[in-house]
Length: 383
Picture 1 (cartoon, rainbow, N blue to C red):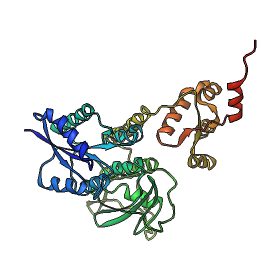
Picture 2: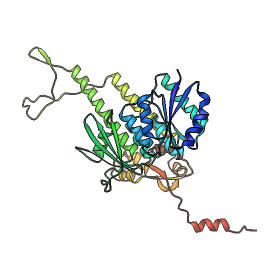
Picture 3: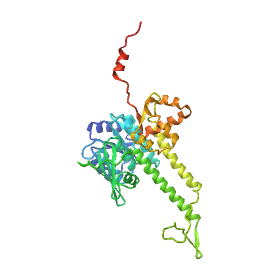
Picture 4: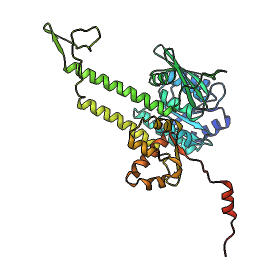
């Protein structure tokens, strides 16, 4: 059966040229076109589509809103992003989480054909990457979008505020700032509504960047799940017997005057330990994927993000790690730093790569005085 690919772009020339060139592969798939997100949604409601290829900047309804609607309606169709931005800026973030393949304009029809075939092959094998709230938020960040995003799930309502791609505030009916962000980022089966920032936007309450917020939210979720599993295992293996029948032990309370001892959780089972190890491996692989796109260079100097430097001053890190992090002063190159701690050079490089992938380490600006450079360039050669 011939597959359908929906191509969405407000540029008629792009639609015509790409459709004509991809028409050579009509035995594999056919092309349906739409000039904006609203028209694309109408097509998705009326026709089965196997892959969506969309631009982001369009009138009537842009690509962000199109993807938001697809996410809200649980439309599990692979999406390929077309962007005029430098691909390394967008692709490194989005493909790093396995969400959106990205192709840069002006388009290479061959590259686009390969991406479409990859998505169709994966779909035929039953693998649908789809996208999540997390990957959609990273798209807003990468494209430096400014908006107010209304998020609803299971009767709950929250708001996320972006300015030039920075998530600067989050709120729900019960909390705001980091607490609200950690809550909203874990919601599933969400519905999204995008709007322009209000004339008087709320104050900045989030200091960490999106990737840091996502990692912390997922860490909290995993810890809560592990605690639940341990509690379940303890309840299963430690029943109390009262009046000849089993009852589930209850934690001690202030009203309990019987002096009952608190329940001690049994060690995690081998299966639970393996699940925890696999989750940790998933995070490690995601981080490694980010590292492969933007490795640090020994010839460059790096400096810590202000948020991380502030955490160092608060003694929130192990002493040995903190000592290594303080070496990143923006003056000495990574290669020079490694010579000062030769026994820890590999650890230092690992830390630098990881922090750079999380946007917590950046290249230090060149502070060489301009007049000095000029003098060097024009200095006469000695005879």
